[in-house]
Amino acid sequence: MAHGPAKGIGRWLFTTNHKDIGTLYLWFSFAMFLLGGSFAMIIRAELFEPGMQIIRPEFFNQMTTMHGLVMVFGAIMPAFVGLANWMIPMMIGAPDMALPRMNNLSFWILPFAFALMASTLFMEGGAPNFGWTFYAPLSTTYAPPTVNYFIFAVHIMGASSIMGSINIIATVLNMRAPGMTLMKMPMFVWTWLITAFLLIAVMPVLAGAVTMMLMDINFGTSFFDAAGGGDPVLFQHVFWFFGHPEVYIIILPAFGVISHIIPTFSRKPLFGYSSMVYATASIAFLSFIVWAHHMFLVGMPIGGELYFMYATMLIAIPTAAKVFNWISTMFRGSMTFETPMLFAIAFVILFTIGGFTGVMVAIAPADVQYHDSYFVVAHFHYVMVAGAVFSGTAAVYYWLPKWCGRMYDESMAKMQFWISFVGFNVTFFPQHFLGLAGMPRRYADYALQFSDWNMVSSIGAFTYGASQLLFLFIVIRTIRSGTPVSEPKVWEGAEGLEWTLPTPVPYHTFSTPPEVK
Ligand code: CU
Image 1: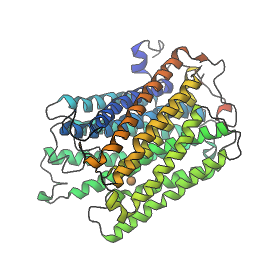
Image 2 (image 1 turned 90 degrees about the vertical axis):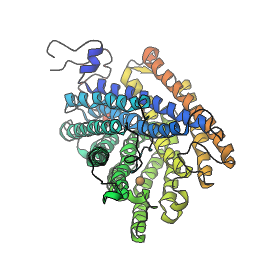
Image 3 (image 1 turned 135 degrees about the vertical axis):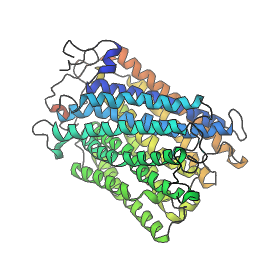
Image 4 (image 1 turned 180 degrees about the vertical axis):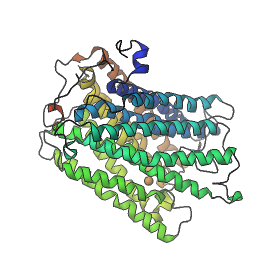
């Protein structure tokens, strides 16, 4: 646009500026977080008491499915792509992302995917009701007719993720400032580079799974239909070959964020930088060879069960190396406890709890008891919420002053931390007990003996939900009327080398984006 940058809505529709696109991703992801969160509130309201109170069981199934899909694909993944867009070019000294127009495209197809998926709630047959893992034959033979919209939406999300990943790889490999060698890159850049390769490897597998579903439903094939010579277990293999690395796609950039915040507020460089890089890479590699630990109950040969059990346990080693490094970074540092640090420390503690329960469910003979129970729900919410959402929140508090040139209200933010920390744990810790006592997941109702902990869990969920509204309020208030920081806010201490590099673009571009040639 030789005649200057677009104004108004056009600025956002046609933008090729990585900061604008990062902002779009972050706001979109927060909108999806509130949508997926409201589904969770409906679920917890129904489960507040035994018996059916406010919704039909059929609608409950739609809520659990949509909650998972919206949170994983709509809230968490775009949040970290948004952070990548904002931070990676600045961290490596690049003027923008390598492929700015594709960057625009990879964002703007996302709202269409989620509009398509959410619109199924109002269609004949209702929204997808087969769980976010959409196992066949529930998602094929017995699926509502709206499953085709779901398939199309998944394809669009996959295309968006692949384009985003190509962009990140091209940027990191080609556009680093002179002197910024790979082993000098900030950890967030490293974790995203590895995550981008994971995404490119597994999103096509997801696309293959939904395409096979599409063929089975509409074109008479029987990939997953035993009556036609297919096998429903094939679906689980294909899905989890995508699904397990997906967990690490979500958590690796979170590791990157934490590896910035802890050194800053400990006033020490990150302990064991190169071991962090290698641990990240080995977690990524191992994530490809453990997928059937989600399928211990399908009737695998005992050799298969043993292999997937031990391979899964191996992941604990590089993960523990990371936790060790974070703790060693804090050890004897001059620590202070501003909000980003509080979220980062909570991340380390709670993610480690999720890691321990992960080792528990990895034990094949014990998993017979844990499988499809609330213990699993508690386990992966400790990994996903305390892992991805806490670190995403930490990142926003940490970088918001840098993004908009204004400082958030520290005491209000600390209050938001404590409400969400307590709310989260009150929600999900009791679900361990419920699962161990035998409460199955994904049911709209439960036996009387589960009443007490469900009530506690629901109260925690409403608290946690409210804390997110407070978070939204704090962010909007900061952008509109936070105390201006005359310099780009640089936290005092040993952040590493990224902020001392010459950065070719100014920090605050909320007012005028640089002209695109
Ligand atoms: Cu897994």
